[in-house]
Image 1: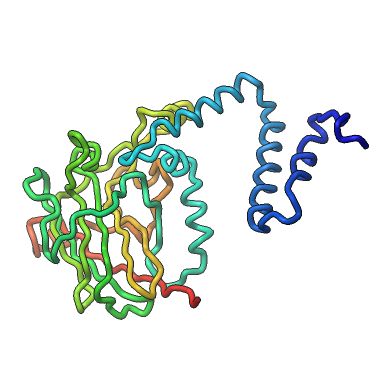
Image 2: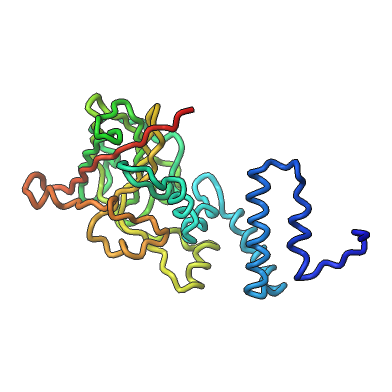
Length: 286
């Protein structure tokens, strides 16, 4: 048939678009794009998307990009609240074995945080309940891992990250530390609070339209890197937080919940304390 005279319809358009993927395209790219085309077309047919709704969707995606800068990543936020980030994470780490579970990176990680020594106060001069952190970095068998790079960051007692305070340029409640010969990392900070993900932008409007809340339970972020091991991106959540069961980004896992008040109940310290062992999986052989 003369292709110049083909009339594309709901019935034949999907196959026509798939047919435009060249046989010599990168195989993985072809696989991903073919699935994306099929599922997107099926979605449009299933919901009977109108031209007006399509236009609203295009405007939404355009606005997402405009909200992104070096301090805020609205596209990652959208992925997080739709559960896509955690689904990708679950697939990537299935079968990891006896290692610490992973969770979302989140939109507030910043490159080049302050490099501080072991035992440092990473929130000097900030008001709030003091939190001692005693972390052990180990391999899957529990052997200590010295010289691991540990990035940590968290929200304030008012629920704000440093990039949301003032002009957003100062670094606080954020640091990069190194584990000692015994695999230990120690620092003090202030206890974080539960907080809403940014919901003043397009992702927040979408949450509200679905009748969902924006809250996340209190937690500390950790990104741990060590040569010969896979990076570990995870959180540790405060036990008893009211939002553990309705985390807006679906990041809570039972193994990542810790009792910050246990040491205080034992009479060991007047402060809160987080004690946690992080176990890293070995990197795959090249």
